[in-house]
Image 1: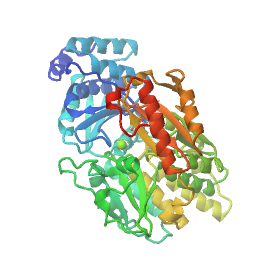
Image 2: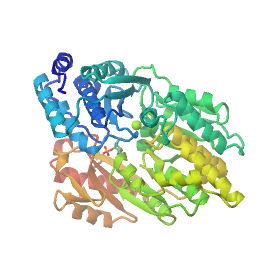
Image 3: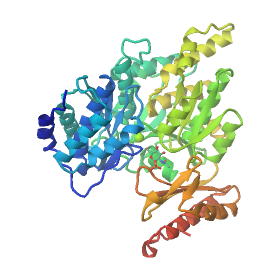
Image 4: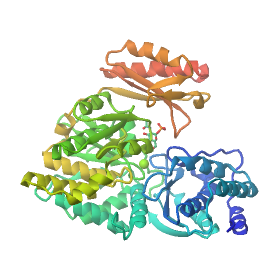
Amino acid sequence: MALPVESIRALADLHPKPAQVRFQYGTAGFRTIASVLDSVLFRVGVLAALRSKKLDGKTIGVMVTASHNPEEDNGVKLVDPRGEMLDTSWEIHATALSNAQTTDNFISELERVVQTLNIDLSKPAHVVYARDTRPSGASLVASLEDGIKAVGAEGRNAGVTTTPILHYLVRAINTKGTKESYGEDSEEGYFLKLTNAYKKLVSTRETPEPLIIDCANGVGAPIAARLAEYLGGTLPLVLENASITTPGALNNACGADYVKTSQKLPPSLAGRLQPGQRGCSLDGDADRLMYFYLDERGQFHMLDGDKIAALVAAFIVELDSQMKVGVVQTAYANGASTKYLSERLPVRCVQTGVKHLHHAAEHYNIGVYFEANGHGTVLFSPPTQDLLQTYQPSTPAQSTALEHLRNLNQLINQTVGDALSDMLLVEVVLAHKAYSGTEWDSLYVDLPNRLVKVVVADRNQFKTEDAERQLVSPVGLQQKINELVRRYDGGRSFVRPSGTEDVVRVYAEASIKAQADELAFRVAGLVYDECGGNPATRPKEFM
Ligand SMILES: CC(=O)N[C@H]1[C@@H](OP(=O)(O)O)O[C@H](CO)[C@@H](O)[C@@H]1O
Ligand SMILES: [Mg+2]
């Protein structure tokens, strides 16, 4: 069977690629200013259908979101049948298709992909898609639908929902009626799965004080509101920053990324969050989570992805010391968290980007992975899941622990990091340990740190090794960084090119905040000067 070239051509002509724009399928899929994305969405629709055909008609997911980016941006990423990110070997095809300039170029590129990947076009194709609350979302979804239609694939619109729910749906659809069934393939199935498990896990605990959720004025707001209904008072939630129709409000001075990068309480929560009360922030598509609290002096304390990993991993190890539990982090993990965790269980450091963490976590019986920015989850390996079903406990304590592990396995969205599932997980652990924010925070003390962006002439000249902790190119730069780091007590710094923005990131840690800032700005200045930064526009804080 051949490609339906005529139908593709007719619809592709309605979605021409803008001249002068180069797209790239990166860590977070395609992501840029929404106004240039129309052709990309159409082509992603076609590609998703081809990927489905290649995988024997399994359902492929497409999520239209730009997460924590400003409201005028948008983006799109593909989800593989088990709810994971798109197989990396397909990223280059996505990039090539998106950059074909004319409809003819696009069709020849498609023919090349079909041939190279040996795709049997007679297979069926199924695609499920969703979008966040961005104003540009509806029209981009319409372009995506044209792409799906152009190749005669079957599409299912999951509406406006969170990224993790879309991942959940993909896995649920593809495992329906099998012994690996992930749950009902509906939003309701998702809410029931999570909240039933939550209720069982906290059944012997008192109802906690209300938790404030900063919804980033995004899709987390309506979804958290529905979650609250299913929780029915077992976890009182107070939703803040839930204005999804106010222009410009999305991610503006709120949300998980704001909290992590500014290390501050969103100004909109001042006076709302009481000292001692727990609060948390979601990002624009609700796959990242940051916790925080104010101490009795009103001082802000942030509990980030590293703190979540420490809390959760320690809890799971205590439930079952036989299980091989491991933690996966990136170089951005706070050094104090790495020290705390390494003293208790195996810890691995991998490259930035969830797909790297996810794959590394699959090597443990139970793998806990979190990026410092609050994106992460816990994976139960297939043999562990089987064991949980068949294990015969011999003591009442074992029986309780087994029941808890079974419920955690249901509570945790294992397809991808999920702010709301992770939030319930944190609440379970806090309830079991009878911890307030203060006690959780005191597991270890964060090392002061600073993250700085540097705009350079060409970020592609930056190459790293050792899980991005060492630069191998530009040659000689790492030695100069090492010399600077040596001068700071508790100093650590590394430089890597961003996978999502046209910048190089500099991270630094030291035992005192002023020193961490100074080290970061010195390294940033070094990178800027060595890599063609214009002296006239050199940021004044660089040293
Ligand atoms: C320092 C940092 O937070 N980097 C983020 C950011 O990647 P960069 O490659 O650093 O731009 O976006 C990624 C996708 O959302 C996320 O996985 C990662 O943690
Ligand atoms: Mg996100």
